[in-house]
Length: 172
Image (tube, rainbow, N blue to C red; front, side, top):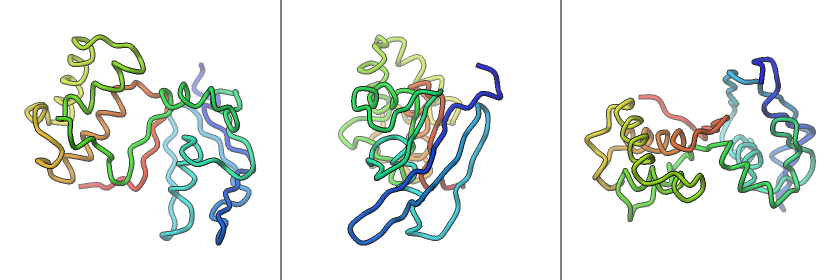
């Protein structure tokens, strides 16, 4: 894939709820290597947009294409899609009953069929990159907010996604 090819394309996306329509005729395209920011006041549909892209919300209308393949209404493709489009949630969504290492290696082992040793090795390399290798045995409630965010990012990177969606990323 050349750097100019479009990875993600959204055409005329809409999302309606009973009392609002946060997304109306939204269009965009994202090429490999691009960083796109969506800004706006609270309640304007930024999170809804990201959730529609990753199919955590069903759009009311429009189309979403990943690498040229329409993914809007294909339930069978959603699982494969989520392996290629990672998401770091506002609240991080770490599993409180799993330590940091288990939070990171579970999805690659289950979904990508990594063996435990390879998944652990990769997780420890990524943890070292974000300076949290020493926290591998800790549980989420033993971490600061910034540490939880970095763990959530590592968990997403461990799946080797082609695109990462960040919902309300915070900087320290």
